[in-house]
Length: 378
Image (cartoon, rainbow, N blue to C red; front, top):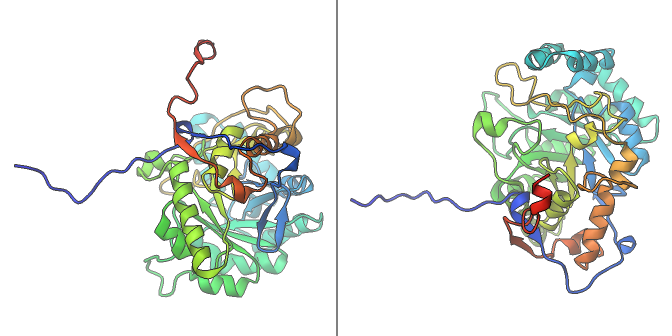
């Protein structure tokens, strides 16, 4: 008896399984344009700092902005629950590995204080930085107006998986069309990994899309829930939705690949796959400017019932300047990330991120091991 099934498996690819093919012309790296825009806000490079308590404080957001980038602060994290967030972060840092998750759960069980939301936003704004705030869909309707009225410039609605159609017990759940119209600031939504969900989200009027479910070094969603799509395939599918939406409406919605990138090569693959920018977390936890002294943990680590994150210790290895712009003596691509983007764009003959989207990608599972016998032996 033959087995008949309607379900098929398709191949999907992560960063280690693909390579970028050089172009037929080359461009000097300094002639490339790596600017990135969300709504009316334009940034000097296409790298965002993720909304992690271990990374983005008001102080870090200001420092990142001074270098030309955008850092997102977690509205539901420690900054808006504790008067002295530095003390709360230190408590997480000082916990044993076995106790870390329960400590984070305890600290994030404290109520969100509306007064602290306004104060943290004003700390960022008073220094002249663009202020981006992140919140889960469940709390967005209540907290978003508070943050925007305090001066937030960009609002990010972020959960493990976000869709435009959601079934819940709420009589009237979060409606993105209304949110975008009422907030008066660009709304970025994530996370998603499929063509259809991305296109439907873009049709609601959002200003940007975050791509990725569970790829980050601190996230355990793929282990706990079994869901996820490798980042190269996810980015390509979501970028295809962006391009289709643009053809139909004339409105371009940037795609931001969120998580799973360890070095400049991974970032370049994400951009070549169709991303307009990338969002990094643990990479910034390694900087001297981050508040957690070389530790990092995810936004879902403190979930009261089903934590999906892990506290890790990448250590303090660099500074914001070296990480972003160099100079560096590291040979593993973990510093001078903007330089890596410019150089890769140059060898592909791309002067803009849009042109970089046209670079050819190939399946190349041996790209990191071919001819590297002496490196692998170290």
